[in-house]
Image 1: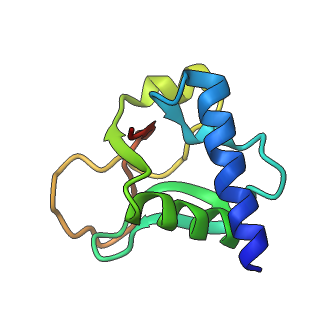
Image 2: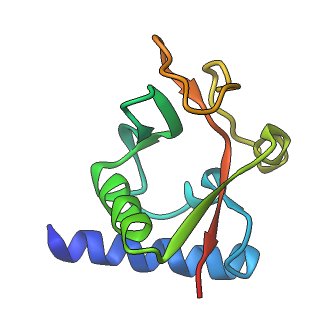
Length: 115
């Protein structure tokens, strides 16, 4: 399992470097990674905010590691980035910062590799 997460982390970084030079990469661009897609949502459960959905457990664990270890940073993004990338979530968009929503909300973000 640990090797699977390590591979997923490396695959995410590789796609980020290939697609956007490590900057402003959307989750839609990561869906091409083998075993990235699944049935989990990844985000901030304390606020009921999703950054992306339909992810595998390995992809969620890899993202947790990349964020927690300050390898990747999330930045708020306009949903049109996802429209251009051809993939958007169909839940309402989160509009208020630090608000605890009763139902899931999508916060569109892009990923950036920190140096």
